[in-house]
Amino acid sequence: MKLSLSKPRITAADVKREVRAYLIMIFGLLLYSFAWTALLVPAEVAGGGVGGVGALVFYATGIPLGVTYMVVNVFLLAFGFWILGPRFGAKTIFGVLFNSAALTLLQEVLPPDLMGLANDKLLSAILGGGIAGAGVGLCFSVGGSTGGTDILAMIINKYRNVSLGKLIMLMDVVIVGSAYIVLRDLPAVVYGYVTMFTMGTAVDWVLSGSKSSSQIMVFSQKYAEIAERIMRDVNRGVTILDATGAYSKSPQKVVMVICRRGEASDIYRIIKETDPKAFITQASVMGVFGEGFDALKTK
Image (cartoon, rainbow, N blue to C red; front, side, top):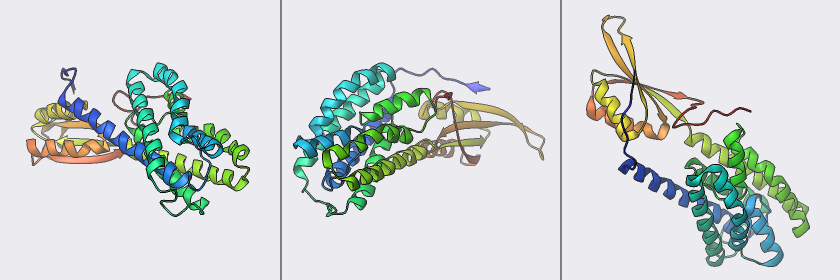
């Protein structure tokens, strides 16, 4: 038996969720901008995405990274908005505007060699790619984007079960390879591929952690109250299962809920407040598809 409640159009939980998403985006975008301005650009390392294009333009002309980033993304925003929907479009616009400002500002205010790694291209590539990838992954985890090839990757990922990190790497191969035309430095291109690989790996690592899910089963006489509070406060669907105790032979109800791992603490709090003596089990689950989780895609 599955319980359902009518949900108001806008609730305090919805507002809280959106505010949290934008705060996570801001942090991710700052990581991305810091990686480029403090690590990759000072070492003249090539990179992928619109950030990589902006870096190449900066190496060749001196035009600030954020300016090129903004101009290129303007031509991609309309397409992403149309394919991925207005909500994603709003977050993407925010991401592009914030990132363009952050790249321009940080490139102006940070010392040219803040980290002291300008002469160590390999370490700059590894650290810069890892930090930038973590920032992109955080944006992806809340439905946002840093723009550019991220938009194209998310469009493809919407219809095909292909890793976002791998999609970004494939599209960035040409961008990194073209760095040789500007820099005339083959090692810089090789380090660019190191950056690209590290960034893609970091994106996948962050996303796999943010999308991990849990299956929680609750054995309690107050199952109805627990189920109602989970649906109302956590906004997760709940299933009530019929069970029979093997020893007592008495029938009982079991509350089963699938949730993101980060939501488990809220569910535990609800259970403790409602029935401190409830018996609870939790298991990790892989591949949760359906409403509120991942869409099932065909290859």
